[in-house]
Length: 171
Ligand SMILES: [Zn+2]
Image 1: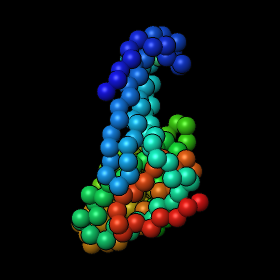
Image 2 (image 1 turned 45 degrees about the vertical axis):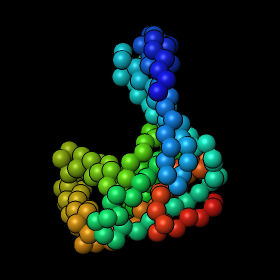
Image 3 (image 1 turned 135 degrees about the horizontal axis):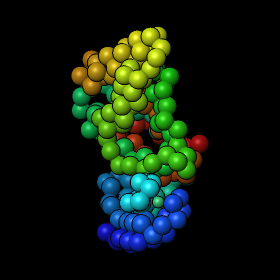
């Protein structure tokens, strides 16, 4: 892993930014460059992923059917948008979004954190109730009792859901 310390931070203008770059080989996806920027002064953090072999704008649709599917690998670059149509939820990709390598379980955990935040902090009783229902649904999905479709779209082609059961469409 390469690391460059004491770089200028574009947000607080101090020299406290650390840049790292790492290369990872991901089976069935190829070599990826993982970049991150962290500022110890203003706590700015950003990470992203770039695939060496770019497949162009792409859309992946995967249906979680049982517990094993939670282990399916997910590569999400910053431009990758993840949607759960059945729950009308999405995490939009863009320059402020972060890139990560995880699995379906990790993706669900990220959605759960958003819903838990609504459940715990919303002033609206209706929102709280629907958050509770969504969490119940996700719990069933994690137990393999309910199917759930996950869509990952990336116009830069740096994201992927890696499984032989995934449906891949060029955009
Ligand atoms: Zn900073």
